[in-house]
Amino acid sequence: MGIAIYQNEKEHKQHLGAIHEIARMCGRPEDEVEKVYELELSKLMQVARLKDFVPVLARRVVMENLRHSAQV
Image (cartoon, rainbow, N blue to C red; front, side, top):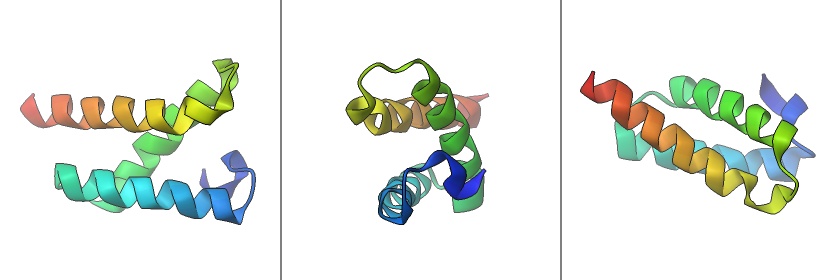
């Protein structure tokens, strides 16, 4: 998906930091985490009223998804 879901380059870099952290914590490749993260982020952005908390929710959902898929 890339930068299209982000407001600007600064926001994109902030999200990349979260992606890097999730990949490190879950032991998964960053490109895999980025795909999952951006998918969840775009879903949440479509329904969120308060956009400020979307990155926090996206991070939680992705962490749960990756942890669950590692256990299966």
